[in-house]
Length: 216
Image (cartoon, rainbow, N blue to C red; front, side, top):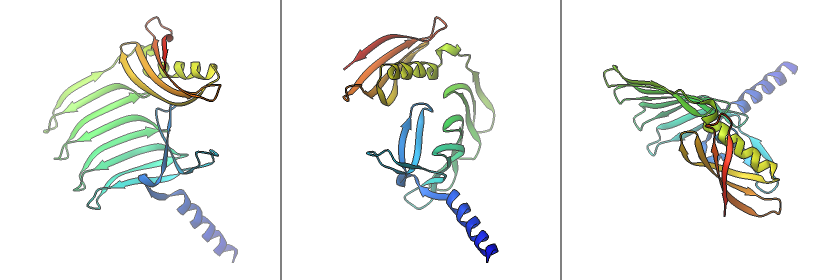
């Protein structure tokens, strides 16, 4: 009897940890810390009670063919996300670590690798491109000033918003020009009202500085 209960318990754990759920049936909340979405099986916007998704998310084409598939751990994408066309041909492959993208591959219709990109901290750091015959056509490595990387800029803006006693709702990059980045931020201020501000940062001096703030 004990052996049977152990088997049933193990089966329940394995099934629970490997749920397959349509992406449209999951709640998606943007997390500025990773620059992407966190997936929930359930999320109550009033009480903030939630259940993080652990398992496999997927989408399907109108013809029933699998369109995409990805894994989540504690609500964040991990490992490979794959996308196929309506005929089942692999088109894209993304590599995620703790919700943040680290790599992207794209293929031609003939199955030949077309492009490969590498990312660090959400920033593009390298790219390779091939023609349909497999010949390397383009390659470039980006040498980015560490203080000019957009993720550092975003972090500085988020810290400023919190330091003023505000609760951030969303943050989106509006523009970038070298070491200058502008972010549109929505937040709840200390008086309970919703506000929007545009924060501009500059990292050219070696230190990320907020050089302009414009609010509605």
